[in-house]
Length: 443
Ligand code: NAP
Image (tube, rainbow, N blue to C red):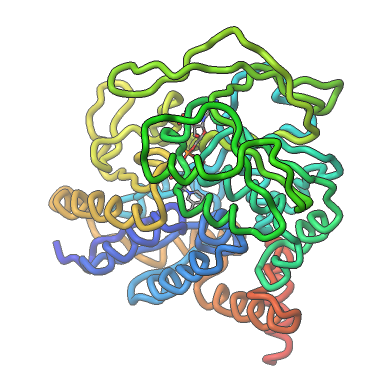
């Protein structure tokens, strides 16, 4: 088969989908990228913290990938609803799932459905102006927030909650979030880790950045390990909790405590926690229970304990891992474990929510190499216009690359007027209005 006749549908336009698109295009495939939001780039646009402008700039890399020949964008199309996976299978030789992990994992403790106990995905999407979370504001009219988890997302959340809101004025933060942060009464954020500093999932540089904020004191509470690693040494030299400081806000890294219940009448008022002890088990340090309970008063709880995928109709899904079952990227049947012809997966949907943006490149290359090696199994030639006709017949108003380019230019131009990196468009309807008004003025 001629590679140019190799047609692939990529579901998701975040880092994993677009690195895979690049690898596919290099191997000569024609790629159609499907994205449920009106704007592409997934985690880069809606996950990376607004004050991490250097990482946000990876968007430029992804813009270039979308501009490659034989790559098309269908944004604003929800696979599973606007078009089914079965229909994609009929229209393409291969379908590659790269939709990431969009939900926050639950703690599984009583009280976590109380008001103001939120998943990190909700909070992160809210401050990043995600269309489905624009109005998902948590109540910041509280003095203390508790963040469960000690990974990079937990550190991002803590930093956003305590940083001087004026620092965000030049970023692409949602105006609703900026306004709420300006009015926020939060003075203290406690990060809760069930294990010790050496097991903390964050990167040292993320805590260094937090500790370098000039109007925030980062302090340590709980177990301090004797085993010296660069991470634990850095944490050990931070002030212990209770150290008197002239600054107004505190972040406390509290090690070896696990939440057992979120308490409150209708809304969060406190969290009951249990001290843990570290036990070596199968070459890992495990947190074991001690029966030593205490309570932390707080008005906001953020669950930053990892993300989880969501099942897509017509695609195998593993509840336990929140991923699509696969072998190195080939999707596996749930019943007999055999590869499902034509279906592939990459990124967080393949390996779970781990690694940095760049990790997705090697992950995508692995899957795409397998897809190419399976090429002899592909069927007859497909008409590239058939998908366009299906979407038109269903009146699905999708955003192609040319539309996205106009929206991107609008966001940057409007951002410049207020001294910000960009002014994000906050809904599909707003995006359509902008395109419509441009058409009128072009005319
Ligand atoms: P993560 O790195 O997996 O960290 C999850 C944290 O939650 C860990 O501290 C974990 O502790 C804890 N945890 C899990 N289940 C728990 C439970 N039931 N009770 C209490 N604690 C629990 O997840 P993440 O922070 O969501 O990050 C996801 C990925 O995105 C990571 O690869 C991360 O590096 C990446 N990311 C990177 C950046 C950046 O580069 N700046 C920013 C954001 C995210 P245990 O270790 O004890 O399980």
